[in-house]
Image (tube, rainbow, N blue to C red; front, side, top):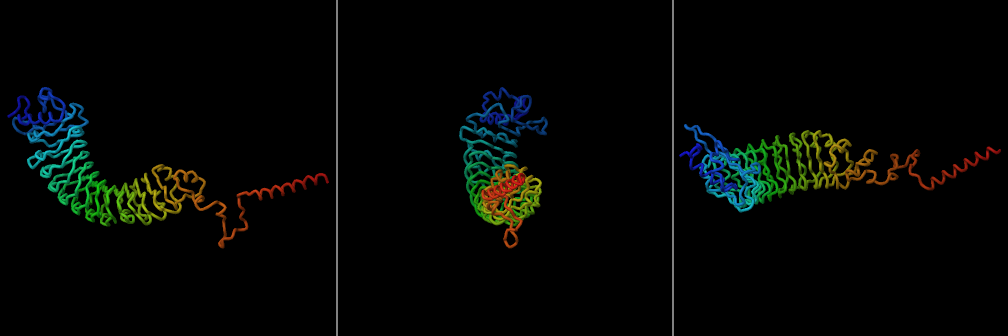
Length: 442
């Protein structure tokens, strides 16, 4: 039955009132917005017209967020069971609404009966409890974002049945347990973000089955073990962030096939291996970061082909040997941090490159690294906080030119004056002047 003058089903209109009354602080909704789909649309509510004759409207979207200034969320806001009356609802997004009273996700709200395609509950600090397994049976769900909440428990293995899901964001919660191997069943997924949780255990090999994946962020968890070689199957991957975990090395060679990769972030993992040589073949890389990974060995000359590279971070490792001068030739490199290593030799980066990067160039705390003693480099030594090679290798007097046998050449004269040399010159000059004066009187 249609509600009078609304072209909206009675049950659906009642459900909308009840859902909104549970969320927003507006006691006179029915009077203020008697026709929510027509003349008096509600902020954040959208309807779609059916093809029936006469046409009927259905509520398809509810959005509550900081961009909707009125009405505000209640301090006691919660999710009403009346959501079940909105059988045509495709989008439910609630941002920064559950901030005072504890709220949980009722498992009865979701299931195969749901038409939801987009569920986003974001930045709700009092949204607690576990993620209901019933979400894994919503057939048409394409976007599931539950980030920046206080959710706990495991990632439901039932999520493997979300074959239409394109984006899964569970970041910034208190989720624990392991990544379920069933996650490999999400064949349509393009974005997977599980960062900033307490997820532990190994990365499942089934991640390599997500053939459409473009972004995978598993950073800031408690993951252990090695990187599965199956990740090399993710041919469309653009971003891979595994930083701040407990993942061991080496990096699998199969990742050399990630030809579209632009961001490779592995910071703060006990990789304890050399810099992977295949990185030089990933020509689209823009940012490479291996800070604090226990990398050892020399810096190979593999970065010269990465013309898109804008940021390279290799600080706090055990790298040795010289810094490849070709780094200074990369046209887009705008940030270089290779501090706190054991790099040595003369820094052979051009003055222009050093000036261009400014404070975004960090080469400090490499005990055997120095800068050449050209006059225009004197200030750079202080600026970069590394010694000049003159100061490091001894005083100028110690660098007296020598012949092949190590003997001073006969033409060499030290330009550092001593008091005895100055006294000798004064005696000679006095004698010459005296003789000249005497000759005038003779």
